[in-house]
Length: 481
Image 1 (spheres, one colour):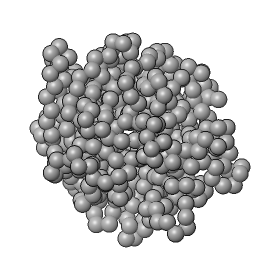
Image 2 (tube, one colour):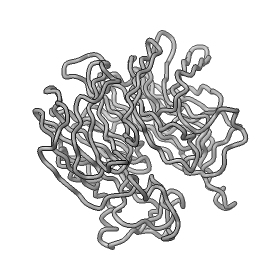
Image 3 (cartoon, one colour):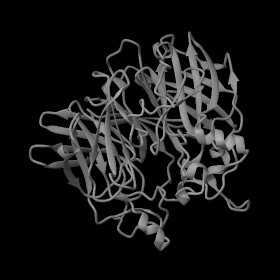
């Protein structure tokens, strides 16, 4: 990009850091609960070289930031995920790929227009820690070292891109995933068994390619989202962005039996909307209930002005919403749960696909409307009680911004309201960074502990908590290659 062209994703705490660091015996303000033993890891974009082309926040090389906690003491390290594209650029000493805003570069190395960035999210399954990016296969890494193990293609059985948001059923041990494509078949869906073996893949028929960032599961179903944020390559020839929100198309929720054939999917339509991140889903009587951050529309990767189709008061921010689908009648009931913008919701891992009571969401900085000029800043966290319809808030303070809040259950607890929430927080005024630990039973109080991180942690995407037993049980004879 031009040296004179301003890019907010290369400034301030969005700007990448260029060093890998490691620090032991970190200062802790407050006291870490003795039951917390494991590793908090957050993924995010961090370009190793100055970018070429129109850099978007989604384009940075994946970098992991980990804080390990053991017996009340904490250490920190950060490491790049050393993907094949990362290594090619390191060898060249410069960036070789453009990014999403320009649909990549077909003249890039190996003819691949996109570099697998592995920069979005994390999952632990089959005794493997995986870094995820929705346009390619996962990369395995080790804990707590963060060393890259390699590309993980499930012994060659993975035949499609792998979403950044697979869903793991803690009761069965299965992991459900999908991948979308601009070319038919537009969606493929897969199931990975508890041992980490990909055992089922099926195609799901759509009439047009769409961008699908997330999915949900219930005890018996996987739900695929066909929202009207379409991905039409023929728009490029007209000088338009390939992504566009089409208000004349409905939103569709597809209910597929977990091990079913794609032809068995049952579609139910709702008014047009979008959802980057769903909170959870579960079965209740004859209904399937889905909760998530509903957007009236999105301009992500598309650009453009505020659409004329928006009703007064509508914008591009996500707000907590509940859908109730009756698969017998096809009737759907919708209700907004809050008018405060929030996203990046997390629930207890043990309750994914089952009824949960609490949702822990990141709260946007007031004044953002989701337009293309906005950079996402999270001023705090919300704790939604979905049974009572109430909300508690934990604000980080003036000039302090955090990220996704990860729920960490108290060991042995069966309750999704008995534990802690963790997130990294950056102080824009002081230039300092912390990992904060919040007691969910006193959610609005100051953090129980603030672990002082001696290096800057750029704003990023999704995080995960890996308890000590997972650090001890990792498997490295993986299907990597």
